[in-house]
Amino acid sequence: MFKKVALPNGLRILTAPMQGTNTVTTFVMCGTGSDHETEPQSGISHFLEHMFFKGTTKRPNHLAITKELDRMGSASNAFTWHETTGYYVKAGAIHFDRAIDLLADIYRNSRFPEEEMEKEKRVIIEELHMRREIPTSYIWRLWEKTLYGDSPAGREVGGTEETVQAIRREDLVKYFESQYVAPNTAVVVAGKIDEDAAVRRVAELFSDIRAGAPHPAPAFVPRQAAPILMPEARTIDQTHTVIGFRGYDAFHPRRWAAEMLAIVLGGSWSSRMFVRVREELGLAYTVSSSSSNYKNRGSFETYAGVSHHNLAKAIEAILAEYRRVREEPIAAEELADAREFLKGRMLMEWETSEAVADHAAGEEMLTGDPLTIEEVFARIDAIKPADLADVARDLFRPDRLNVAILGPEPTFGDPQALINRFA
Image 1 (spheres, rainbow, N blue to C red):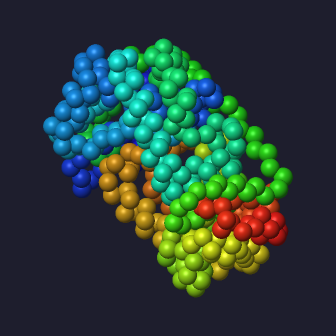
Image 2: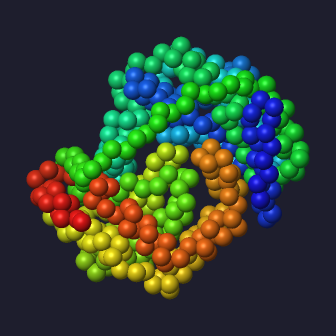
Image 3: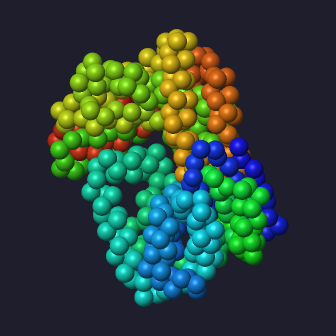
């Protein structure tokens, strides 16, 4: 599905023609994010993403950019994550040329006006406040802090109020010039396209981006010898917890087996965590498991939101399911059900040009080799029950166990005692 062309400056172009759609999604992805920041720089990747929409040499201000997007009837957005920053426009296929011209303009020619920076600082600080005020969002921030501590991987992607306030225009320009170079950029076009024409147009607009090596993210070396518990007290109506383990990076041969195990444990309404924690014990409305992968690290986790007085019961039940899947073989039928569930969900998700472009851009930056849906299915079909058992035995150990808790302190009880009994 994906054709990849590398320009002489090192920029990569990926295309994915799709039948049965009248839209085109164009993604421009840069391989930089909060992982690449020093502590004083914390939040600069996210700040820079915001400033890309404040005017270019061709489109002088925010309104000139947004009016053009609105005239296309487009869906557009940008995001910053640990390892990547992305910008995309989805529009009718007739608007592809306008969409890619706009994306190239903000990526190459943004002015970063100083008078807009002070206003945007206030906007970003309100965004940080909002994320902190939403427990179902903040628990994941706490989870990463539990796993990765004070390393870049454990910091808030958007920085802190103090670091955001300290960013100057010269800091933005220096970071932009360091990271937004051609070899650190991928452009993905998916949907109703003439593939060769799309490649030519992208090459026209991006061929003069400067080549050069971006500043790399520091190596992450996990250090853990015993379970880690990180509770944070807050007066809220529900206690939120994430219970899991250090997992696999994106290159690990067991990556897809871990993904499948997450489906078995907590990926569907008939999964083990859902049946036990919600249906049998009635402890949570939402309980789910996932496997997360980055270039140099990964995690396997289960989230639940519970009444304060049920926290200990929920932790005990979740740890019991981890222990059971580690010690008892998984039936071939259960694996087959999980396999078909995952494949079905992927088929539905990949019906849109936005999802295909997002996948290709993300995986290109993560591994350099975005798989087609057929290739993903081949990996899923090759997984055996013994592979899941290997993952469970490898990951679900006390020296990899981490627990984050957000809720009122008097209701915590003694979760450390429960965690210490996990063996």
